[in-house]
Image (cartoon, rainbow, N blue to C red; front, side):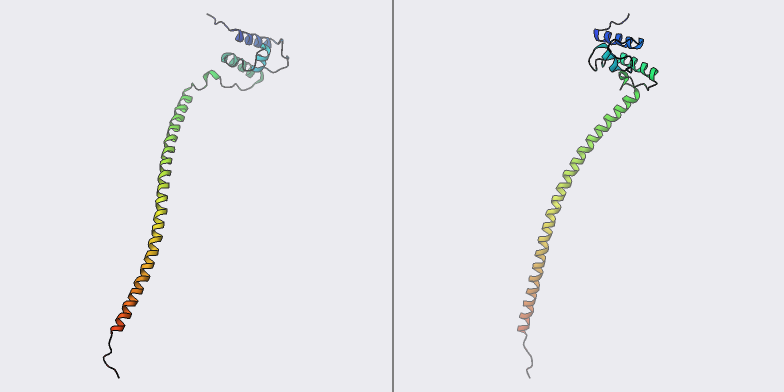
Length: 161
């Protein structure tokens, strides 16, 4: 049983057949065959043939045979081959892995920021402790000098000449 064509598809098919017979009614006979030329000949807007994949594939095959052009990949099979499905699965897997790595990177960045802050605080504490050490060292030297002076003052001479 033959499929019934809707009005748009019928117009496109009739226009395509007129162009193939060499007797277009609207476009120039010299115009190169294309989906757009068929749409113009049918008196339809651009992309009117978008939903008619078989018609577009037939036009592409005719163009290829007439002009020796390379056939475009048929739109109706796009994304359905095993290779395409395998690639889509791999892409999905890689996107998931990328999302995981982004989260891990964010966690490590936060940890790095926290450690940098702690290091800066420790550096400040070190400088304070170093100043305190130098101050205590100076006080200890001063105290030792005072003790030595005190001891010298306590020493009594045994003989006086």
